[in-house]
Amino acid sequence: MDKIGINGGKALKGRVKISGAKNAALPIMAATLLASGKFKIHNVPDLRDVKTMAHLLRIIGAQVEFANNSLTIDTSKCNFYEAPYELVKTMRASIYVLAPLLARFLEAKVSLPGGCALGSRPVDLHLKGLEKLGAKIELEKGYIVANAKKLTGASINFDISSVGATGNILMAAVLAQGRTVIGNASHEPEITALAQFLVTMGADIEGIETGRLTVHGVNHLKPVEYTVVPDRIETGTYLMAAAITGGEVELTDTDPKILTSLVSKLRECGVLIEEGDSTLYCKAPNQIKPVSITTAPYPGFPTDLQAQWMTLMCVANGSSMITDTIFVDRFTHVAELRRLGAEIKRNKNSAVVTGTENLNGAPVMSTDLRASASLILAGLRAQGRTDVLRVYHIDRGYEKIEEKLKLLGADIWREEGGL
Ligand code: UD1
Image 1 (tube, protein in one colour):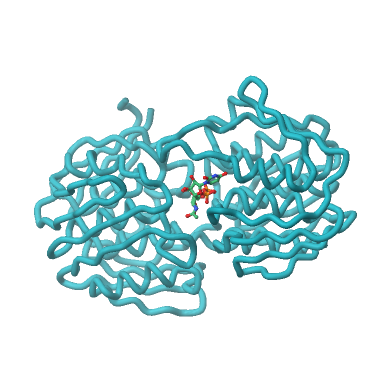
Image 2: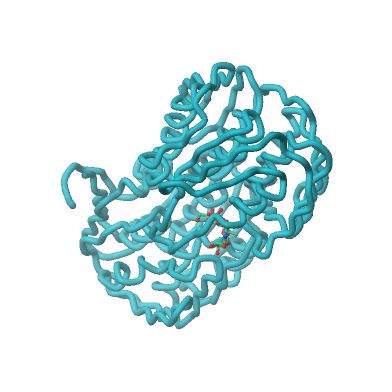
């Protein structure tokens, strides 16, 4: 297995291009199943999850080509309506094919995702919502088996604002007969991107960017050409990398408007940030002020940036509290950061972090995608050498991370070996 080696202590300087958003690209890829024909999708990040979704679409019968960050997907010969366990267990986002298969072919069989490093992560809201639209759903040998004679619009009010459930119900509703209202809908930018993609395909959706989506079902959707929005989580990770290392970095091809909660928290820490139309300039202060955060649905602080924020607070000038309300168990990075000398006390879904001048390099283990990013950021700051093992997690979600960091002056490399 590959590992990433880092000789820490170098301030990052320079300019880096932000990739397309993984969490927008994956549901959009699944949504191509809603229409027959040839799609072109641009600004798609070259990531393991994207390749896994491409593999899944091929299993379903689509022809998929991926070159130079553009995907061509031809869905005219889809004939197998199943997402097997082998793929779903490596990528939860496979659940996004459930609704498009059901909406277009009136049947789908998708493995239940099961638990993961972030906790149990149920899909009950997806299933209840699809049942309300008229699907018959059974659980058989670890699979969700869904059938329908037809889908009919309904009023669905989520108890919890869920990105995945909103995406799935939206994709079913666009081809359901009549009107669907989704209350307490997620309006994360990736859901907005999915909704805009569906509208380009011919869907009728009102309330995009709000917590209440109204969908008027149409009979037919068409294949389209589309460009994926920038990745706000990658953007946030590089902003924090600059701040943590005492650096000065400009990010291009991004969208400052979808990262306001992080940007205002970074400013509270003393970080200088200047926003352009599609750029963000960031300069670290001499000392990072401690600032507490609580994760929340958009536009709150994203759970996908919680681990990286913890690394930033590990080098702040005092104590802060980090609380995750989305995934209460999302703290596997705590024990690894402690190995580098971080002072962190965890209590249930919160952690109190006391900053230190003395992070020291050590071997650490990636446990999930964003935790891996937090360990790389810590390695960039720590004195001496850090090896981040099991980097396959990072390859799920960060395009060319060591190349981009190298461009910014980091002493970072990838090598074979390690656990
Ligand atoms: C979540 C994050 C998303 C992030 C992704 C990967 C939020 C609101 N969502 O999306 O930003 O990119 O993880 O880290 O920040 N839930 C249920 N039943 C369901 C579905 C969800 O109880 O059927 C609960 C979850 O356990 C969680 C909350 O709802 O506590 C939000 O989950 P959801 O948004 O669905 O998770 P993801 O779509 O994976």
